[in-house]
Image 1 (cartoon, rainbow, N blue to C red):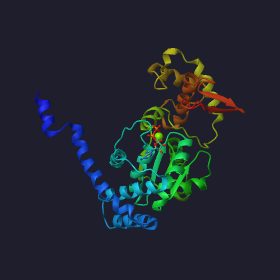
Image 2: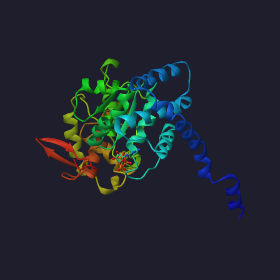
Image 3: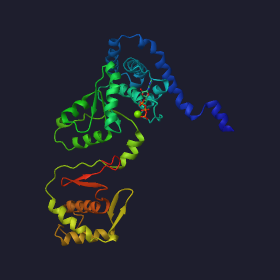
Length: 329
Ligand SMILES: Nc1ncnc2c1ncn2[C@@H]1O[C@H](COP(=O)(O)OP(=O)(O)OP(=O)(O)O)[C@@H](O)[C@H]1O
Ligand SMILES: [Mg+2]
């Protein structure tokens, strides 16, 4: 009873969240006539004006109504699609760094242009993360019809493109790509010796499409990168022969988490086995000199107990290829 009364007076929590957002939408709508009256060149010049205001210390929040009004006008001209009020609301929420849930077909692609454009005004780049290459390509081409009208450059990181093209795509104001490409470029950049040979240029703002899929489902498969290391093929072979000698009480498998670890008993067994094979330096498994041996033992244990041929990996042209459990490729 009191709850109902309180809600009547103060509004539900949802109303309280939506009220300021609706007020911003009203501001954007009030600017509409001003933006429809601009010529194409004047509309494009707005971006420079916003950038200058930004340099002078204007906050992005203060620029939001004008920036969103400009994007809406650019979309109307470039795509013949005028952002609905709910799409503006979605854009505001994205800009706040929150998740907005919209049903299929509600036009999430268009929503992302609002927050992407606003946050690209600093010239530090914005990433739009999609679930697959097809969508990255489609959305970047499709939405460039909006961004180009505002003088913003758009790039797309497709799988298989060369470093030069990658760097050029990252240098754009807005860059579309999949979480895999963004992730692997990050890992590869971290293995480089000079800043100039990196392809990414730091991180400013990202919009993630299908966030449930990317941050929950896909996040369960770690991105694994391998690089040239000192030749340790002998060690691989030697450790590989040790693992079958372990008994079931030596390790614990967690199928769901895709992990396996030595039990206390197993640690002693592996220490003994490594020692017998002449792979142990000194007499303690956990001495610094034995880091490589311990690492190989752990990896070999995983390979033996967690990975099944033709399910988790295939052997092609004499090479091991890991199968992505989500795409099956
Ligand atoms: N404001 C608009 N005015 C007219 N058409 C629109 C508007 N916004 C989106 N559309 C159209 O709606 C369709 C669906 O858009 P979009 O693919 O972005 O939806 P979505 O929310 O991403 O859907 P899904 O969940 O399937 O990915 C597209 O054909 C798009 O052109
Ligand atoms: Mg979509």
